[in-house]
Image (cartoon, rainbow, N blue to C red; front, side, top):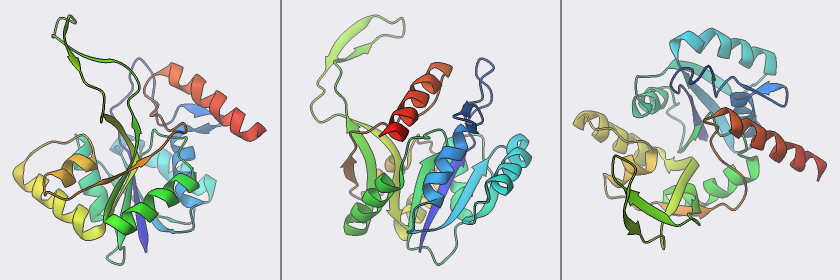
Length: 227
């Protein structure tokens, strides 16, 4: 079985904007993220990680949407890696693979999830990613350009990130034990010297972080519906 841990425990309102529960085509952003995994046949269970103050709202959303695969709602931690760790504790012992996804990435599709899972089954660890097309500079704290960064070989990490259950549990147990902080699961797995395969994604899969991202997400979803 494949389990999904969806992290809907981001920081609180930014500029009065709650990215997870902001409306997107009539539903909260997080609803689109969960629906993609609910609709993926290979996914057997979904564990949702959220903030304590949003727990009731998420419970109501699960009930209203009629999601059958959501088995647990757990409270997240102060940092993302702590939220992921809490979610991993809720995964059933029958799961052979775990997919971890940002709840604020509403454009992920079942097809993308399946492709990443297929790669993870071949390699043990896989992540959706996109090559960085822009010129990249390193700057000072004051915002002054200091040096060029060669962009060849640079990739922007996305989610889902999918791992065999033993690999991700070992990586996070080591991380928590060391008291270190990472911003994604790839970083945690790198610490235990496991190779991670990248699945190139040329479709939309950005993370909603500011209000203008919603406008673009609206256009993307509308375009897909019209095709």
